[in-house]
Length: 112
Length: 116
Figure 1 (cartoon, one colour):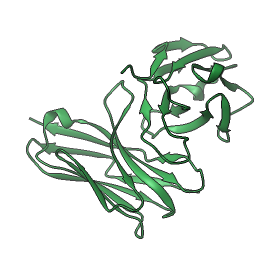
Figure 2 (cartoon, chains in turn red, blue):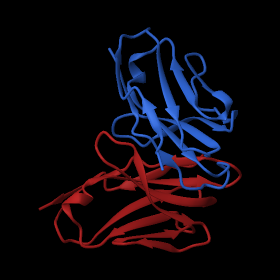
Figure 3 (cartoon, chains in turn blue, cyan):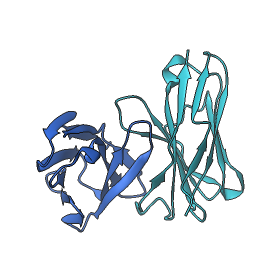
Figure 4 (tube, chains in turn blue, yellow):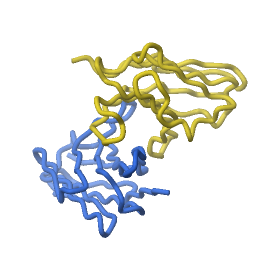
């Protein structure tokens, strides 16, 4: 059974810092992995989707990497801004028709 | 393009009462999901529909939860009778893929349920 964990649970950084959020999954037989953002009281917004054959994906100031062999993905946020403050969740999609399994999220606060 | 619509946004009920949530997915999306998100946790899949058929309901507490997807479009999730531990956000999501390929999924803003 796939389990997804995220460390740290919460992170507070000053504006302008580069930061890394971590996601670990126990079953490396994944189809893809997605990173989502969740603002308070809102649903989830997809940020990046990495297929199992890919090593990384980039969108603006965001870069996500995937290492299936070690069961890890990282989300790198460059030059953080207060507007980046939110909870970031990763979700691993298993092979063989299995659905997304979500991690608990990392709550990010970027201080002005 | 309109997003995933959910209603009501907020609901407070007493335990043992019933509640229903409605979801309208993005137009043309064949796959619809209902997730339960308890505060501080990631979403947990309750049920997945492909058109109007159920693909995965293995984590749906079928003694109290039920869901249907009418004509392969809108969906309703019902809880009867509600328990205190059902207090959570119920998220509806949709995807243009089959659900087997892990396409990007789009979430609604959620229905917040408090059971007192």
